[in-house]
Image (cartoon, rainbow, N blue to C red; front, side, top):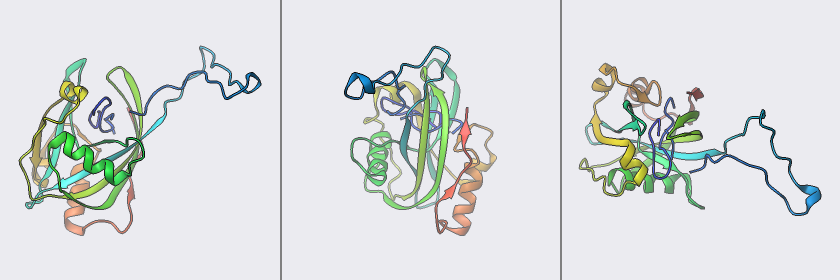
Length: 207
């Protein structure tokens, strides 16, 4: 959840946070013995699966953005702010995951999703494991500003301390850690120029 955690996973990429597909691949067998994949040696790195993630840049009628305040469960003083969102489940689409995660984490339903604004690849440690994520950031609009965290998962309850609506000016003036990196600048550009004609590819971030 370094951008923030999630359900049984973190939410965003922290230096880019974590919400299920980051499991390590072990030795596996594909059918017959002659097709068995060799087990990695102790010196070989084990690759983490890349988790597909949808996030929402949610704006209210005053163009304030909603962010969650996350922290590392083992180190509660290590904190950051991040956008709502999480990993895709089953066969759901990125857009369906965005609506579901928004409802679970913030209690806000019925938000109007716009285009995908940004895409990012990130890698970070969270809650005792490393997360590899491909993140899509949707523009979202809502008339509702009241939030409800009752739908959060156990991990989210252990790693999210609250939510807050931020103005662009407040975000620009803040010295707190926020993910994605340069969110204040990205939000200013969005509010002045509107959504990009195609998703902007943000820099890859590894923490």
